Length: 159
Ligand code: SME
Image (cartoon, rainbow, N blue to C red):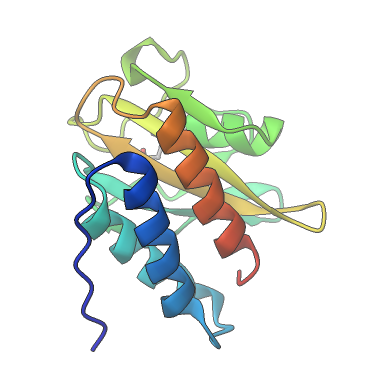
């Protein structure tokens, strides 16, 4: 059993604790699905005010739903569409304070109000994206972005 309890006084510490727990979970494991599944569970447990966290994989130039926590989500997203597709097309983190103001946002859970999507890249190849949704507007700050990018770097090594 992997028994983690993450309680941190500030975001930097919280992300450091999650990153360290993630390193522990993936250590010695090369199965990408297992690693994505545990990462989704860990982030969902560890971050407050989150209603969805998961992965979309780059399958032949289309994003296809991977392991996640939260409500069932749309399965296929073309590059360039929605927050995830924008992250995939531009290879840039998308941090959206109000998803309803994002033109092509794809609503999977009506409760989602803000979202962050981190592209996962290894050796110049886009592996997929890490997507995190919140029911709170402007939930994700620059500190969250730095923390999520770090988690994305750790994950890109083992996907
Ligand atoms: N909102 C995303 C779609 C995926 S769900 O949030 C799980 C988007 O616009 O790409």
